[in-house]
Each structure stands twice: as C-alpha cells, then as structure tokens.
Image 1 (cartoon, rainbow, N blue to C red):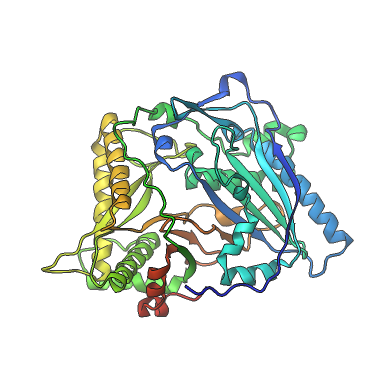
Image 2: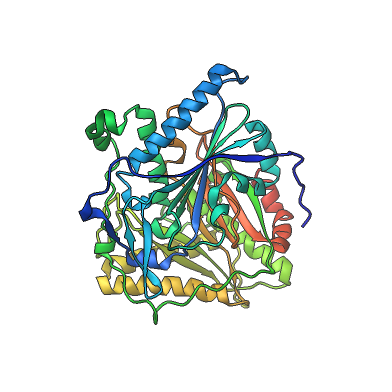
Length: 465
C-alpha cells in the first residue's frame, strides 16, 4: 500500500530520563499487591494514550519558556504525588514458576522522560494526520521494545516539548496492571493534582481527600488460579502481515443517522443502540465486506466488545473504583449462511446486542466458580479465532465515556487525545473533543485496508482524516 510520507524533518532529543517515585514511602502492609484472575488473561503489552496541549503564546519568548519550565517541574511533582494513591504502578511484577504472581510495591518508580522536538505542534499534527506512524516518536515504549517484565516499569511517561511551547504527554501503562478505566483514571487524577496547586509537603491531607480512592480489591474478589491447563496460548503475530493504521471520524449527525436506520429497519429493538454499539456494528459490517472483496466469498468473522464489570450485577460485586483489569471481552460471531445471508446493519446490531445481553444474563446468575468459566471461555474463543486462518478476527475496544478530555493539568484541557498504531488487527473507539462523535483508529492488514477505503459506505459516512 503506497503511503504518503510526511515531508516534516523531525528530530527528537531526549533531555531528561529518570525514575519518579511516590512522594511518600509505601507502608509495609501495602507493599504486596495480589494480581487477579483478570490480570493473568491480558496480553502483557503497554497501552498508550497521548494528550496534546496547544501553546498559550503565538511566539516563544522568555515568559513562554519560563512557563513551560514551570509546567514541567509541576508535572514531575504531581506525578510523584499521585503515585502515593496508585502506589502499585510504581512497583514491579514478580514471577513464580514462569507466571505473574504479584506486584512488589517498594516504590521502584515509573519511567519519566522529557523530549524536545524541533518543530511546531501544529506542523507535527498536520504531518501526523497523514502519517500516523509519526506518533510513535512521542511515546516512550520504544525504550522497552523487547519487554523484560521482571525489570520493566509498569508506567512510562514521555513529555514532549515543541518549539511553540506546546506539549504532548504520552502515558503508557502495562496492560497487566489495568484496563482502560484504570489507565484513564490514573492520568485524570494526576492532572487534578497538578492543577490543584497542592503539593504533598504543603497539604497532604487535602491532597488525599481530593484524589480518587482507588480500590485494590480485585485480587481478593477474584484471585488468580492455575490456568496452565485451562487457557489457550496467544498465537504469535505474523511477521508477514503488514498492518496499516487509519483514523476515521464519525460526527454526531452520522451516528444519529445510523441509529435511526437501525430503529427504522427493525421494530424489534426496544431501545436505541449506544454510539459504541452502532459504530462497532457499522465498522464490523464493512470489514466483513472488505474481507469478501479480498477473498471472493464471505468468511466467518469475529469481533468483540469489552464489557466493564464495575457496577454490573454479578456474583462478584466490584467497587466502582476497582483498580486493575475488571472486564470481559465479549466475542461476537458473524457466520455466513448459504441459504439466507443477512448483511443489513440491523443484523450486525442484533448479533452485538444478543451477545452482550447473554453475557450479562449469564454473569447475573453465575456463581464465583462459574464466573471463572465464563471469562475463560470468552478468552479461549477469541484465541481460537486468532489461530484459525479460515476466520477473520477484527476485535475492538472502546475508551468512550472515560475522562480523556478532562485531563487538565492546569493549563487547559487537551485539544486532542490519541492512541498509536497497533501491531494487531483491531480498532479502537475514542470520544471526539467536542459533541458526541467518535474517532476510530483502525489497524488492518494492507490488502483489506485498501478494500475498506474503496467502500462507498465508508467514503460517504466517514470523514477523511
């Protein structure tokens, strides 16, 4: 696939690299965190979010430079402070017999870097919209390309400075330590402390009261079990598979139109779909068509929606602020039927809605032991699909409704929040900064991405990046 390369000549210079520890030592009784059953099931990779902040000044002068310096100092101080509430993130994973066992919370610290780029933020963004691979240069994960989980920091931060005074804060959290809720809440609470002008030395008790009280209870509610004979391994990534990443924008009017189309075409829907459901259904239907255009026939295809179990009715009552991984990936199958192939948007919506409702019903009446089985079966179903060359796996995840655009560190909310290119075929849904739209990061093999971009439904319904 021909890729239009950016003409931006960009250089990234690392100015600061160190480990930041909690501002107060973690007490002895909190220095071991039990990992949960959920934590053992996720792939041990870093999840990345980048927060973009425009400059306050049109020109960079001494005042602007001094302001950026103050902001960087405040970021380090507030990061140290917020780690007192999220102390496990400053620890390290401990292994036993080749598997995750617990987190050693002895304040080893999170990786913190400051970098300078020799361009303006608006120049970078203009180039990055054309070539999303550029965003990788703003993220710290390349330092740990081959992750040694015994010594790897659980959080990595890179603060990127631009010539204009703009900043991009990249935050990466090892997925073993938490899901989207945990990751976004950590950054949100970090920003809240930063803008509060409180420091641990000045008023620690007030700082504690104004910060989310994370609940480290999941390892006790659903403790780890021996999965050696229960869970299928992750299949390796294919080195021959070239993944292309594109960014698509759904505005509020487009989403509303898709919802109306579903409700008008099928009166059996008792309630209107959510924006996550309808965008997922639409994209899944087009991905099935892209696969058909590539192979010449309809193939089975599986997608997924990650269900946050906080607040759900199950035998296990998770606190709304439970820290860690507290979700189940709900596998959703499209299986072609030679007699009657249903390909309308409402049909894909039915598949999603039925799978979600069945999972909720099963969890609501399940015992603790049955919850283990339900979650294991869901993961095995997805891993089997990934290993089957006759089935297309196009999984999804959503960060919608998380407080991404509330991350105000004291100089305003971010103008944009993004993720970065992934090496697996999946798509990520993120809220847009204004209105009720959705931004989609689609990671797909090169051949089917070309087919997808030629899809007239995509061309008419999705704004170009």
